[in-house]
Length: 199
Image 1: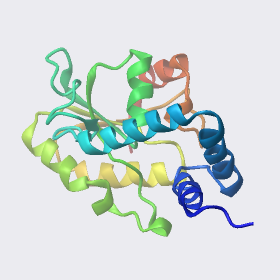
Image 2: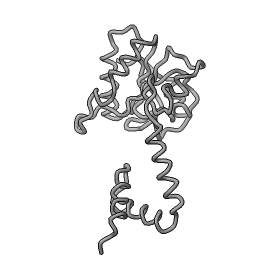
Image 3: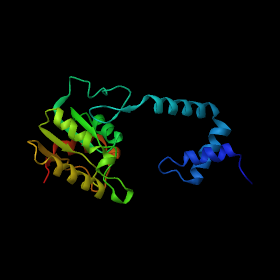
Image 4: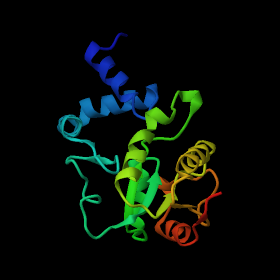
């Protein structure tokens, strides 16, 4: 039996979400249409608002509705520290740990040649501009401990090695293959406390 075109388009749209396959997309679409049309409108409105209003912070590259996000606009942050993370979810995990009070740069991904993601897709040029414009004494490489995260940390370290900036890497507490988004606050606190020079 053929589904109405609108339902097929909805299922295809839902499949764009990470981890959502055909069956999950169908289950979501049917749930929204059968039992939660108000929720479907709420999701649609919130999504349209976010797409229209949210762009990138000029300094840290995180999502923001303003030219500078709240973190970069705060005078309570230590501007001499720059923590480089892969995603906005990683930044939120670090912030929720309450152990770091410096600035950030969000790469919006990691180097992945198999997926055609190189330095240009990560906005490395924006990172270099931040380093040119602001006095940074320490870069904390907080990319994930995956092969792609390690390659990204190596690349950023090489790019910044000729600058007079201390480069450290998060240490103990983060398991190899782990991702910051899923770490608890205690693990992140231990990792920040035990960071070491990056070589």
